[in-house]
Image (cartoon, rainbow over all chains, first blue to last red; front, side, top):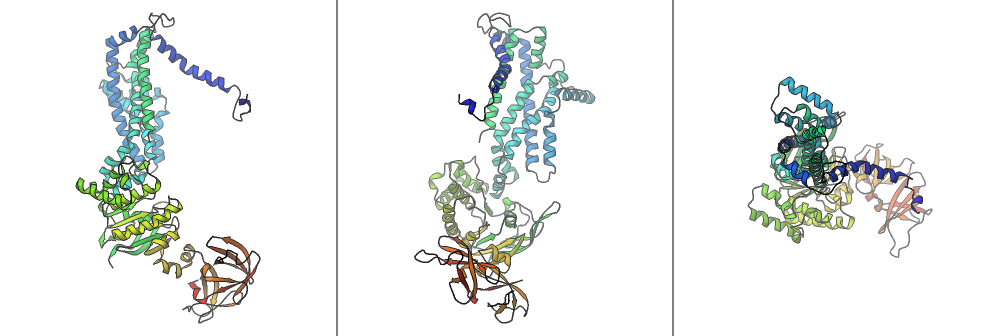
Length: 262
Length: 353
């Protein structure tokens, strides 16, 4: 074997890596496979069927929860992306702002804060100010924690952009707003789309914060799935989860591709 | 002559501890229809001065005029001045044509006129067939031409060029020099060119301002700057120079530290004053024997069209002599040869010490 002589080869590491991949993806694989199971069992295979998907889609509660999730995700993505774009432009371009690195760090700090802490803090804050807007509460909470996710790809894109492009636009008779509209935003768009998609997924999948701040009637899809699981795992849960997984993978992939566009 | 750009006590200081005085008290007049070069090493303030003219920076103090009008505090879009950026900075999401018409459209020129002018500009820079391409489908030299066309299209009163040739390879750089000179002549627009390359500056400019440490050291045409530098920095930065410390003996005689005398130009300095003498290495002659400073060749640098001989002088110190190579290709001297350096008094210059 020539591999033994390869100066970069480490014995046994291949197997560990393989095990890691299995551990990561086998549970997901089983979930997807059993969502197509013909019988009610979530552990014994008895033939292919789309029955559970049909049932899931026809379920009123699931429809309501999906609708809630989508409304929340769309609004909070819009708010979070707008604010993240403005913050990124300020922290990357405004020369009057001192300690940009500190502000940038603080802005993405919520990514490191345990979600349960944020959840409790948000709940306490909302009840302290007596906020009760139904879905509005969740939209506000989601907008806030989605900002750092939207901010990162936008900021990265902006940092990789030649500042002289904006100077060139100014030089060629464009004022601040025309420069933003004609040069900065079009060039920033891949970062903005990528950030928005990331925010959308984070909002769609969120469980802990939503559970804390959701009022009666504001059930989202992840919370509904959780309530089903408590009763027992059914292929119906598998089916909804598979759909959610598919949507997530699709959006994250598109976000990655758009974000890395030249 | 009309003044295109005037600086009067122009200053730029960047805050910090300590504050950076990027430009100290600059006074300068750039004439209309002139190819003017700001020359200096990096950090000398030449780019700061260019950015002040473009409006990307606001001066800390002083006046900046464009054909007599004060423009120091106008934003860049209100100045009829355009810039060619060092790395071109073409808009990557627009085609070549869209890049060139960008300024014209912002000036609210009708579409038809913008297209016609852009076509003229493309012809001017020999890129007529490339109008539909995106900048990343062009070579460096072609991007450079598009950047020129984009900046020239709105017919600015002054064109600023920020080291536009530094990213090109040698051959292309040389052909672009001639091209830029031609463009300046054909358009009649005042060019302000920033470079750290003294050869480029000498070859292209009508006049040069040599800058160092935020100050303008000397302004003059290329020959004056090269032949009669006003101080040691200019003499050293432009071309090569051999320096001597000497004492004036009155008239045209100077005493070297070892006691020998050397003949140079008349000086106004008092007898006994310390001065610095210098000459250009190509203006001394290397001989096997004769009158002059004797020494021994310690090093030889072959440059193709000429050769630099480093001579260790018998009385101490060393100097460099640049000599054309013999027609038959043989060397004038070898390392270790005993030689005499003849210096024509007309080639010696006096710098105030």
